[in-house]
Length: 257
Length: 259
Image (cartoon, rainbow over all chains, first blue to last red; front, top):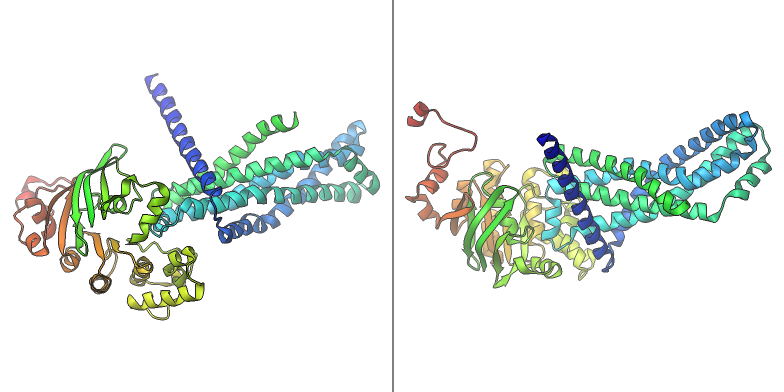
C-alpha cells in the first residue's frame, strides 16, 4: 500500500515537473517571439520542412480517407435510404474532424519526430551549448521558428486535406456508385458552414503549435547520448499524438457545442 | 580577470561543486585538472554562464556574470570563445558558416566579408581549402581546429577549452597544444582549459589547479605541481590507481594494494 502511494506520488511529481518545464519553454518562446528580430531564414526552413515536405503524405491520407469514408457511409446509409447525404457527411467530418486531426497525427509522426531527433542530437553533441557561447539564444534560434511554422503550416495543410478528402468522397460517390454529380456538390454546400471550416482550422493551429512545442521540448531536454535521442523522439511522437487526440475532444466541445 | 568565489552546484542529490575558489589573472593560461566526473566541465560552463550556480559567483573583470539578466548575459558572452570537447560544430552548416556564425548573426559584416574572415581564422589554425566542406567530412582533429577557429572568430578576450586533446592521437594532441600556446601568444587571451591529459597540462599551463570532490585542492606552476608533496595531486599527476583517491565502484584487494 505504501509502495502504491509512493508510486502515485512519484508519477505526479514527474508529471508536474515535465509540465512545468514545458510551460517554462513555452513562455520563453513567447517572450522571444514578441521581441524582434525574428529568425526569418530558420522560420522559412521549418515551414518548408513541416508544410511542404508533409504535403504528399497528407494528400494521400486525405484522399483515401475521403474515399473510404464515402464508401462506408454510402453502403451504410443505404440501409435506411439516406445515401443522398453522403456528400454532407464527408464534408462535415473532413472539415470539422478528420482534416485537422489526421494532418496533426501525420505531422507529429513526420516533422515532430524529426524536430525532437535534430534538437536532441544538437543537445547531446553540445551544439545547443555552443549556440549560447556564440551569444545566440537557442530558444529564439531553434524553438521559435518551429513554433511559428507549426502554428501556420498545420492549418494550411488541414485546408488542403479538407478539400482533398471531399474530392475523394466525390470520386467514390459519383464515380463508383454513379450518383448525380450536381446532387453531391449541392449536398456538400447546402449544409457546410464557414464556421465548420474556420473552427477546424483553429484546431489545426492549436495542434501545430502543440506538436512543435512538445517536440522541441523533448529534443531540448534530451539527456544520455544516442539512446536519449531515441527516447526523446519516441516521447515527442507519443506525447504529441496524445495531446492532439485528447485536446481535440475538448476543443470540439468548446468550438462546436 | 576571472574570479570564482565559493561556487556550489548540485544536480539532484549529486553535489558536484562544493565551494570552488579560483582566480585567473589576465593573460594567464590556467589548466584545471581532475578525474572524470569531478565537475570540470560543470565549472567551465559556470564561467561562461551556461549553468547557474546554487551559491557563489563568477566575476569577469569585476562583473558578476551569475547575476546578469538574460540579454546582458548574451552580451557578456561576446568576450568569450569556447572550444568544446567534440567541437560541437553545427552539422547543418558548412565549415566557413560555422566559423563565421557569430559574425553572420551580428550583421555588421556582409557575408562575403565574413567568408574572408573565416578563411583567415581557418588559416590561423592551420586549415586551408576546407571552407565549403560539411563538418561530417572532417576528421576529429580537423573538427577541433574548426571549433577553435569558430571560438576565436569574434576576437574574444577569454578562451575556454573543454578537454582540447581528448580523443586525438598523441601527435594530433600535441599539435593542438602548440595551437593553444600560439593562440595565447598571438591573441593575448586569458584562457581556462580543463583536461586530464597531464602532458597537455604541463605544456600549455602557466598555472595548474586540481579539482577534487568539488573543491580546488591545490594550485601551482607546472613545475610546482610536478614536485608536489600533496598526496592527492601526486597520485593524479603520476597516474596511479592506488592512493588517497579511490575509484568509484572499484575496490582493491588487500594483497593487490601492497604491490
